[in-house]
Length: 317
Length: 304
Image (cartoon, rainbow over all chains, first blue to last red):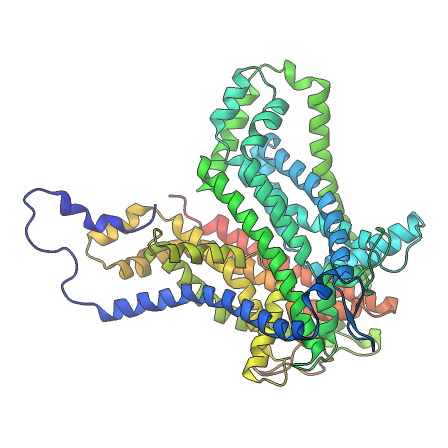
């Protein structure tokens, strides 16, 4: 759409004079600027490479001491104890609990909000709600964390419901994280549903379907790949979210077996361990990067799945 | 592109489907479905509203001038955010200076000059999309590793924090700049080229000026995200007791979200009030930035 091909247009004219329309004089300044622009773009690749190297080098050091198998399948995480143990499963289970709870909240709420905005809301209401949703997506996660710790866990869970839980729980962190992800899922799947051509809705209506049937049986399936992309991106955000879990999920790395327990997630560990002053090159320092590498790979996987699905829904129409 | 069609679609849709047979719209299932949708919206907005209200209630008692003039202290009644506010300004300022030119340049290359048929350019695109979704804490680790590589002893320096946040913001700026450039019609470029401008002059004098509102909106939204971000700076050791005003690129610093996190993790209730008051201030700043972005978008965005 926006490449500059028309420059070569006149080539089609008959009896074209034998002069080139390209500039005769080399423009060194111009090629320099274009080179710089290209360097800026290539820098993004360099950053990815940098992330990989930055994570890999200390991780390799780490895996010289701890075997990959012990790391991935060990069920005791105690990197600072005298009898140190580096089984990452406790961190993984805590991440799975918080992310799972968050998605149980975020997927229905986000999709419901998206369907409403895309199919039911009048243009005026839509015009108000969409920017509000965007602004809410920008609330800092520290504020969400404070809310999870003080209001959800302390006031609601322990105060109102009198639940048997400590100062922290994966439930409080997960629920609040779910609300945090709602705008992400709502906004992307709303885009996908709005991209479904109007003619499909009209065809469905012409066949006698009401608005709900049209939404559920025509628009939703047509936008499915975009919706899946939104959900997968939500998963990736939940797994990578740090401050909410660092504040409200707790700091003890144990295998989490219930939603009211506390647990330390992968991101929570990195945030917490970084507080202590670990020397560059020490095993503690390398541990940070090993967990970071695992986190990066997991989110990378989800991101690529998401991007693939987005591509599909863009190509159809 | 999609933005335009959706706006138009919603308009036509509500006009055209409204007029059809109403019978099916009032079946029990339809009504229940609509109620469920309302409920989703209501719950989501309700929780977020509760968040804002509880924060306001908790923090209002400490929302006074001490909050912005005092330094952190061991006694909650004398503690304030002054160095954290200045630290945030320093870090975000340096981030903006580093990231905006770089991001715009990369976007101009990808959108105006890069040949999309080449695999390398497609790889760059895919990579930018992926970078936008990398967890922020990983950028903190990257900056930490980078500083260690340079042999920097003290990792709590403004430029280090700006580096981490810059990496975080860069994909956001690239993506929004590309969208802004894409919205400029091809005819503008063709007209410029037909008058003898070189491709670069076309970009500099026509395409870029026309897309400034879109770029500004994207940049402000990206920077406001960076302003609220704490995780990467936590990794970089920004959680320190700073009782001085940061005064340079190599100065120690702490930022508002970090200071709020610090107060959150104290046991005394007074510190939690202080954290809520800090949150209100942070939310107000972010609201102002977002409002500015939306204002620029609505006021200056050209519809072609």
